[in-house]
Image (cartoon, rainbow, N blue to C red; front, side, top):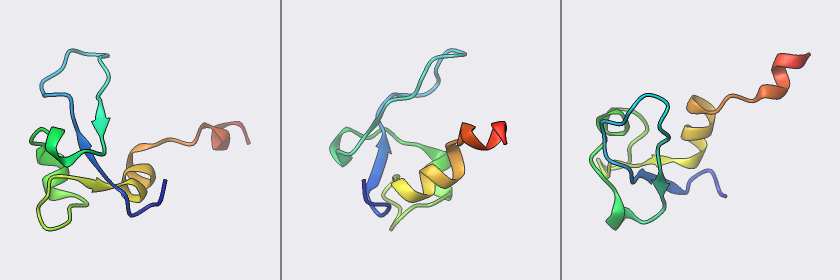
Length: 66
């Protein structure tokens, strides 16, 4: 996926502990998300770029073993 691709949160908040979050590429299915509104947004669209999501929220487990 290109790093500039916009992703949006689809699952509503709040969620129960341990429950996952669903994301979508379809802006019409998005739910309001305050975190994305203040971090990595583009024109206040409530989304975040795939590149920003990966660099800020994904942990690369390979580095833990070296």
